[in-house]
Image (cartoon, rainbow, N blue to C red; front, side, top):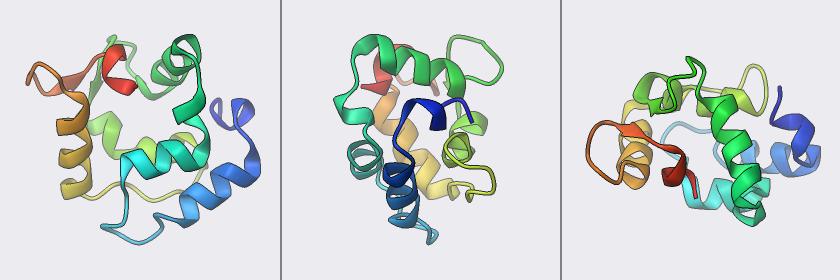
Length: 104
């Protein structure tokens, strides 16, 4: 995983453990636990580019649903409710996509 190389393994393990159950994902808590909350804009853009699987310059719901799998193979998918809440938090213009500025 490209993100795993840029973050501490113990932080990733702890962050994934904190949201292993369906419905327990909170993007703010996850970003803080995994260390993304302390990254520079350039580092966040690198993370965005990993999550943007289709390289469209946007993260759509299908990619966001698989967000946790960018940190560890076999991680669970986000539930529809978790995906919708995460999307709403990052989708600043209501177009159903998150641009790179929505990651911070």
